[in-house]
Length: 94
Image (cartoon, rainbow, N blue to C red; front, side, top):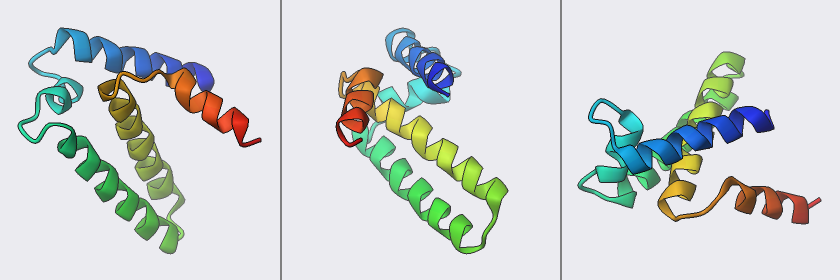
């Protein structure tokens, strides 16, 4: 999974730099709401994850969990953080 996260984060960083017009990721970096757009998406996806868990819907749990991780990675990129910052925090909690 680490490799998948690294590859996804690299794509997010690329979209941040190149801002392709047809990219949802790029639109988050240029949204008129600024970082609030990503923060709102994180809240929305968290609610959807909670509801999926309540319903014991494994497929939806995976889907919404992936949405949360994706938007978290976008937020890290927005804040000029690295995936290693998150990994270091998780390591410190072992």
